Length: 442
Image (tube, rainbow, N blue to C red; front, side, top):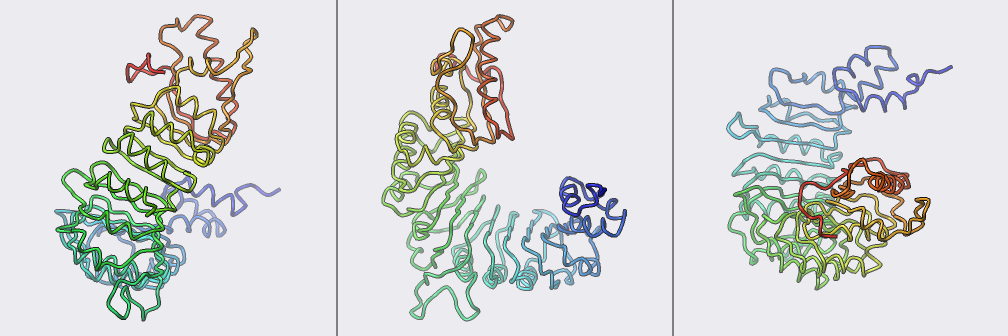
């Protein structure tokens, strides 16, 4: 009889839960185990501590296993000249402010050497200048899908070079971001995700838009910031990325929310199916107008700590294309969301898979139910049978004695409802809502 660990597919699953030291020990058990666990040991290499770097010979010997590399320290030139890592798909580069600087000009060579396999690139660190050789190297990549920039300061010229090369991704070597007349080319670059996290664009204005190439294949756009770092004037440019399907941005970004609402209402981003906003810069009326204007069914709505409330909720629940197709909903920190709204969500969104909300009063559940004398619930059921992640606080009523029969019946009622959600994988529920005094808001 074969032991489960004798099967490579079982060992591969076990390896995913081991740290590197345990995986190395497992690799020493036998030849079969070695081939399985070495994949896990070498799938990611961190070139971070100069005194603990793997040798060039070791990296080349295990090149078939390497999938991701993170750079966090200055390296000898030989490491930037590495090639033939045919499975390398992700490169993460972090510049340590105040420490030894990375040899950034040589980084472009490492990118070019893996232009046929690289799919994800991330550059972070407090840098006031990014060598254009890095952006030019990204433009040579054939399959690059995602670029993340964190905590950088870019000039208009830097941004221009970046976007030109983003437009070049996936092209042949003879094409570039401009046509024969010198105008921005509406290219077919493969970049689908662009994240500008705490990035400052210096002296940017809408007049510069005409000089920038288009990114027609861009589907995910995220703009976030840290205190003191600004992103200015990019609204107009991104209206020329018509195929964006998912937006994420935070209140602290200096983007005119009203302008974005107008662009959505005018149909600039007709493919939007995901809205992800954070912060009090997004009012109930603005959210209402955006939800009303989306022509396609909304699949994900994350409005954490916004003023999402009565108007936006009414819009969401009145449009069948939205509430019957919504799969992910995050209402955490939305003070205007009531328990009654959460109860409606649980009874009217059949495809919902993830729900984050602050609280649900059992009174609202009981009011929507018909409990007979035997305590059986014959009323309106929670129809979100596909839900896998649920996080909310269920208020059983603080005025009841926790040892009373009525309190016990309320608990049983809630447990029966939860037990019908068969696909739950992550369940975070509390018994009473104690964080805010909202007992009278249902």
